[in-house]
Length: 116
Image (cartoon, rainbow, N blue to C red; front, side, top):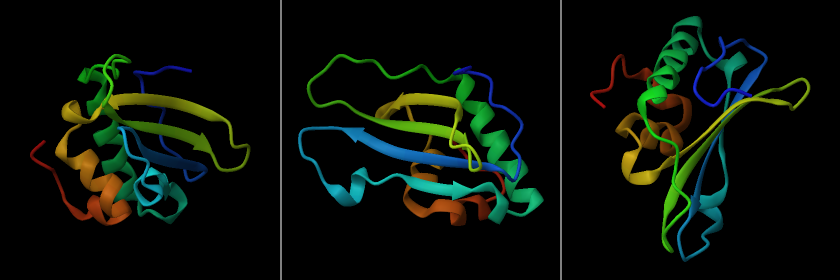
């Protein structure tokens, strides 16, 4: 599974975004945000693919530090459940659009081109 190259998105794919780490476990924040590509318009699906491709320049999350938070992104097939792409990013390195995507789900895709 490539951790850098994002596969072409299809309507069979699901993106799960979860926030991990930190000292306190808060179930509401730990639950992954899932975005079903089949529910997206072609424009939103293309926008999501372009945004995910931008993550190639963001370093993988480090495993050091006691109170480190990170985002885990996993693209998987809805049909088989098999993951085809995954990235872990330190929260301070995460672009603002990723935080909005985790917080707001597919509504964040209404923005044409986020600044970061």
